[in-house]
Structure formats: C-alpha cells, structure tokens
Length: 295
Image (cartoon, rainbow, N blue to C red; front, side):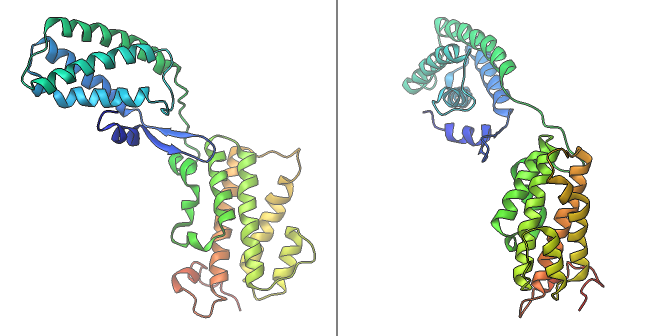
C-alpha cells in the first residue's frame, strides 16, 4: 500500500459505530479529483515529474484505499477502472524513482488520459449509488452528537452515571437522529430507570415492587430530595407509564420533550446522590438549584 493510505483512511472513515453505521467524510473524493486533474494537466504540459510527484502519490494513496479489501463502502462499478488507473499511476511513480526530473512521454500521457476518463465516468456512477444519506437536524440537537455520543449531554458528571444509563442515552440519541421517536422515548426512560435504581441504593430505599410507582413511594420514605422525587413521579405519570403500552407511540416533539425532562431528572439525581457522600463535590451537589436541597 502506498505511504499515506492510513492517513487517508482516517479522513475517509471515522470508524464503525456499535450498530454498523460509519461516518463518511466526502472530502477525499474531492481531493482525489483535484490531484488527478492536476496530474493530467502537468503530464499534458510535459512538466518534470518532480514538480508534481506529491500529487501523483496522493492520488495513488487514495486509490489504494478505495481498492483495499477492507474499504467501506467497497467499490463496485468503478473497481476495474480504478485498478487500471492505479496501474498507470504506478508506471509514473516508477519513472520518478528512475529519474525524478524525467518527463513522461506521449504514450504515458495518453494511457493516463484514457484511464482517468474511464475512472471518472465510472466513479461518478459509483457515487450516485453510494448509500450515503443526510440526517436532518432534530430540534436544537447537534446531529453528530446524537449519532456518535449523545451521553455527552451529561458533561463533567458523566462518570457518575452507570454504564447502562450512558448506553441507553446513546441509543436514544441515535433513535432521535433517525426519526424513531417511540424507540428514543423507550431508551431514555430506561436510562432514567437505571439512575432511579442508583438513587434508591444511595438512599437505602426498599420498594415492595419493581415499578416506578413503588420506587417513588420508597424514595418518599427516605431523605431523598422531594423535588427530585416529584420530577420522577411526573415522568412516570405523564410519559413512562403510557409508553409501556404497545398502542401508544410518540411523535418526534414528544420524544424531544421526554429526552429533555429525563436528562434533567438524571442530572438532579446525580446531584442528589452526591449529597449522601461524606465529602460531596460542591460542583456536583450545586446542580440542585437553590431551594431544592430540602432536609
């Protein structure tokens, strides 16, 4: 593989996500077009190879990436023309190694010209068939964060959340991004329930049943913050209980509202739990607004 291919791979793909989605950056395709066009012009104008060897190597590196067996998405209709173009570029690279100041002859230019034209037409068709889609913005949320790391909403206190809550928050973010509001509501409610379990453990609450109503009643018998408990009960009554019925579906605005309420409740529970520690972090416990730290 040509030196530099790894660098292009890092640009082309950010890496697979858990659900198989990959973030594609289209700029290298634009860059490849620039490098090939420049090579065409300089070969036509009989420029010495050492004046544009970097462009030749860059084009070769990107073609190597496209042709690599692990490339995603793989080349289909343009693969054969890419292989043919890469072979001509290799010939030019070999000429440079023999004599950096040499000028490619007319035969080499014609070979490059035909290979470039064939690849250009085939790659145009390839890009038109590429399974790349634009995900529209949902509310005020950054689409990239919804897909890549929705749990970033928890900022500096993220490490205080159970991994299950973070994972469900990330899943909820993806569901919002891809316009699956009912699934988004399900996952953010699960994240909240995981945090409620941590709240109950911190305040030694012992519910008689495994449901939100019993959780609320158990927390009311402890020193947990009453206003935090009321938020949990509000989510239970207005959102979570209806959500468990299969005939109930959420519209996108409802899912966005539920996301906001649940992430706010999770933040409040993180702060409430912090107050139970022998040496609480003031910056965390202060996330309970003034007047909410009831005895």
